[in-house]
Length: 176
Image (cartoon, rainbow, N blue to C red; front, top):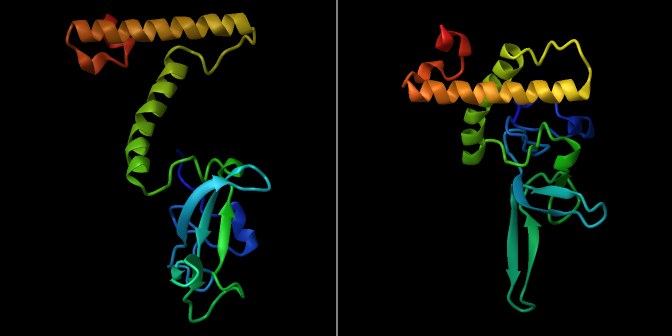
């Protein structure tokens, strides 16, 4: 869950994207394409997200009892009768497509938590000297991480016991 870059990798193919990473119509960049599910693509077996022309409609034929896509554009951007389709492979660009659609309620809720998680990780690295280590020994690193985690949990437990929740993230004022 990281902010989207201003340029996505597919822009060299002529596609433009909005702030949520959704491709836009080639003739009108304010018109986002409609998402039509996410399936495994038949050829590559990679999960894909399918976007179709925003002016595409499904028509039902009563005689044959079948449905088909029909594009209702005045100025179509492709010769296909069903309009333009774009397949995006999230695994090829995890920064742009982390598995949750940008702008959705789930994205907003998770993005709020992200700030607290990053603060906690930075506190863990800085306070317990994990970031600026001099040794490269794997066993020493493992021991340092375990001791840092244990001391962080003890800090939380002590701060909670004495009802001083403002000290949950800082060991020094709690001890002093």
